Length: 350
Image (tube, rainbow, N blue to C red; front, side, top):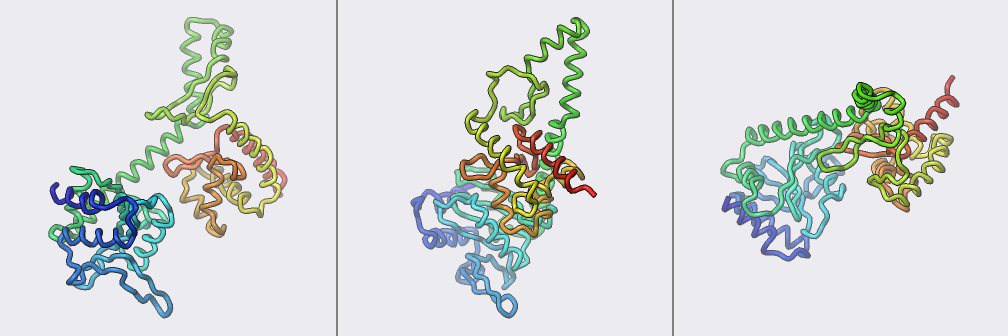
């Protein structure tokens, strides 16, 4: 653990948060020298200009090598940079793909380890681990064991990747089941079970009057609402997770924009929404990767999709929600979108 704590000092404690990328890169080189790799022996290759084909060149920040064989690539960002920026992951993924490496590391205010997406059934790299620069961090100790020269081996890396992939797939299954539980069928099941229980002791008219003033919701462990109202009728002063004003404004956008999208199917947002609805008819749940593949001919798909799942004054309308890469229609506008889609299908049938 001492070696990890020393890395925390080098990459976090000993430098200001506003350090330049060039200064921080030197710190990263120092850190990997502490892990046994030699800059002098060219095991740490910095900004190597690599020719790919007749006209393409790349210059990765750092490549760790052994006997001139590329082992893994490192993308360095200054500590003040937001590592959630998708451009950073995309850049690292590009280097991994061009160098034919299964994994790469993004280092800034934390460490992120990525694996080639083909190993997890994705068309982009997948985040395996986030490691914060905290002393005595168990994830940090694991990082040392994996990436220090003394213990580095492809066998250890492959075992690590496979274990993480199993976790990713398990999490995807969990999200799929969560999504399934929030379908109408499960809602109706809960509704029927509750009603039947009450009917054992009370008349149907009494039960109906009681239930019409309540709504039943399913919450996840963090109390984030993930389930629509089971009973349509509910008190007017009932609260939910959305600011009333923002929600009303967003619904107004939906009522205005969605009919236009379905009437003009060649628009970018129209194509994204129509592709989603068609996928939804074929199977549920619909994953982000499935929608991205269906929209592969749409330029700047990701930015357009991002706007369609965000409540913002600048967006066109929020129609999507996404949890764990599972996409669903935004609940407040769901029924309206579904009705407009049915109209669209009738207009285009035959």
